[in-house]
Amino acid sequence: MAACAFLFAFYWRGLDCWFYQDDFGWLHLGPAKDFGDFLQILFAPKAHGNIRPWSENLFFYGLKALFGVNPLPFRLVVFLTMAGSLFVLGAIMRRLTGSAAAALVTQVCWLASPAVAAVLCWTCIYNQAQYVLFVLLALWLLMEGRYAAQAAVFTLGLGALELAVMYPAIATLYTLVYDRSKLRRVLPLYLVSGAFTVLHFVVAPAPRSGPYAIQVDGRVWKTLWSYTEMALGPERLMHFLWDWPAWLLPAGTAMMAVLLAGAALAARKTGLLGAGAFLLLLAPVLPLPEHVMDYLLTGPSVGIAMIIGGAVAAKRWQAGGAAAVFFLAVCLPASWKVMTWNLERSHVARDLIQGVVAYGRAHPGKTLLLTGMDTDQFVAGFADLPFEVHGMYNVHLAPGAETGIRDAAGIAPLYVMKEEKARVLLESGEAVVLDVSGGRVRRGGWRGG
Image (cartoon, rainbow, N blue to C red; front, side):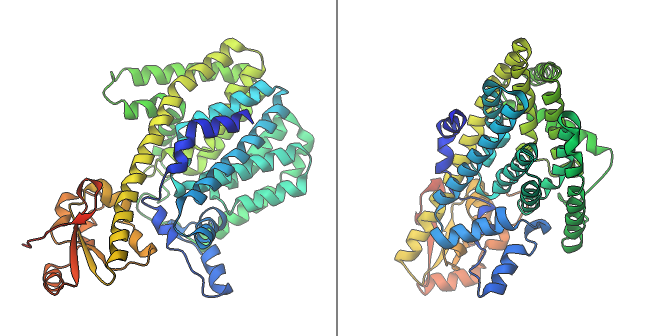
């Protein structure tokens, strides 16, 4: 309960995060025309060829069907899922170490990770939270000797996020370190992982180019270091405090690495299991050198927390305590800043969308031409067609409005209405110009080219 209290006490602002960016792509799901269409929505590969029926398709489709475009129910499900993971993680650590203090330290260190902060703010990466719950629950069921339930939970976890295919390897490591008599109960799960992997690549082949293209080459080691550096904490903090002396980053990273290595040695079996979990859950994303994202550390960060908690349980307070104190001192401020950044970005989207939607509903039938939009507004609250989620298909950028937008993909001009058409609609009174600069939506003017 203490860890859940910390979750809500520290991350409460995450409940106020609104939808932004990729969230709107998922909110376009549905409604289903019939049961067959519903199954298609649920199981057909979606963005980037992913097959995630529970954590993306059902999550967005179901909550939108029940509550509409209201972010709070989505946020609550994310928080409750994380609370469930905390309970299971605590049970695992108490089983491994016999220490309630070690369990609490593990839970708090995991929550402190900036990767977890991202998941608690951005709705569309709920898959990270959900798959961790499945993996942890399957491991706990294995420890309890409930093998059929373990297999069922693991299999369901594959529908949360494909990273769950690594669970049999984590379970194998656990049996080799703690209880070899259970190894034979784990081996059949490799068949499930293998079958799912084959099915995934057959149904949704990996792209040959772009950030999601699999590239197994020497960059794997660089990618591993990038993730390790982020997971240790100082890099994420310095990401926001970029004006601090540059030497603090390598010095802080080296100090955390030394402290964590000492904690792993002190934790012994738990340290080995934690290190293995970190590497195994990270392994599937290492061949994606162009898609290094902090939130992909949500699962691997459990391993780091286990190392620190295990050292505390071993009563090596010099090792475990020092690692915990330094990790929390660095990561909690970084996580607070991650939360603040996500919250502010979501509110940029909220202010833009709610203002335009309110005007559109007060003036039905009008074509709305937006001007004064900046890059943050475009990326967070316009590019993913949020107005169509509200049934509005008449919102465009005014001619020339794209000049104030610097989006990396260069797609802003695609949303601009042609000047000839805009002029005709404005002269006939069928369109109005809305100035959205500064986060306020108000009638504006447009003179044309």
